[in-house]
Image 1 (cartoon, rainbow, N blue to C red):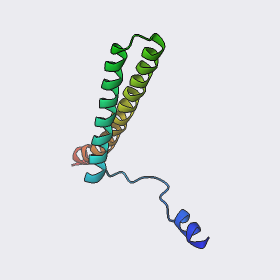
Image 2: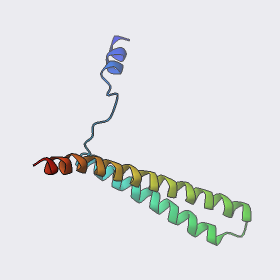
Image 3: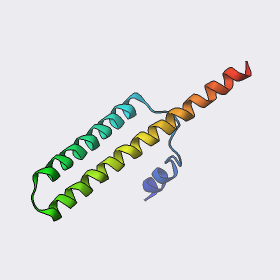
Amino acid sequence: MQQQNMQQQSMMQQPPNVITSKDQLYLTDMLSWNLLAMKKAHFFAGQVQNQELKNQLEQVGQMHHNHYQKILAHLQTQQQQQQQPSSVGSQLQ
């Protein structure tokens, strides 16, 4: 019980503003997985005759597309945050 409380107290409230190389590799994998799933869902939606199944596959493809876009947006936000301090520092000099 005490060990569980200690673990909860030592957890970070916010992630650090640094993306490690391991994080970057995992994010690249996530982008690849979502892109592949999106392409497969679109391909199979074009192959089936059942309209209900076709609609479901298109929804699945759209879901993976949304996930892909969210990951990209998050990465772009992180990149902009990391570039801002350096641009402010260069303006001060």
